Image (tube, rainbow, N blue to C red; front, side, top):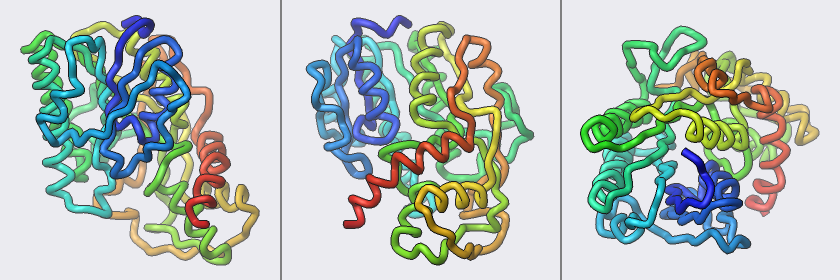
Length: 316
């Protein structure tokens, strides 16, 4: 799909990936950004561009969804999700995420909009061999978040094969960068701003995963949408390298200029449903001509440098 001269709805448009996607798309497209601002922030949405309009919308409200899903749209980029599964109610996460996706698809079908990109997750694979390719089976997620994303992928598959939609489902590694909250890099920064002498690390610190910068995430999505033209396209987006949690702590501490003692909560998982080891195969996306610019360690460092002034301002 050629992403130029289009009208695109971006859900989760005030969040980490959504704000970056909006900025990239607005250079050559009209963007309708929607978010309920429960996690994202209105001030993060680029408002200095004539091609961007923003609406505060709760996607679990079917009537509100139908007001923003209009026949003049060419594409929906669905990034909205409840993701803080270790901090909230699992049933709410599962039901709300699936309701948001169902509401969008039903509204799109009714007005004749038939192209959607979806932010899925590496968590759909569960504890899989590494690097994990897109055709790995069986998919056995161990978290509610992974389960709901897999259910949403299944629903998207129905619309691709039975409603003549074109779908791009992207399974992300851990995305890092500006406007991020409630994940390991901002968590470490917030803890060290509050107490530079001691850093609590969830689990045993040996968890080791791939991390991708949000700029590479967005570039990968845009590139694959331009190249992949099946009815239902599934692509991993990540990096070829991993970084352990203790090294992330080292990087964040170095960016802040502190040298804390590490205290571990213990156990191989940081929380229920945490996958201690994860690296996705990105050969399918590389075969389409995409490469991430930053590997895991560099992505984490850049994210820490970008997040530090944001989180300092939050703490003041």
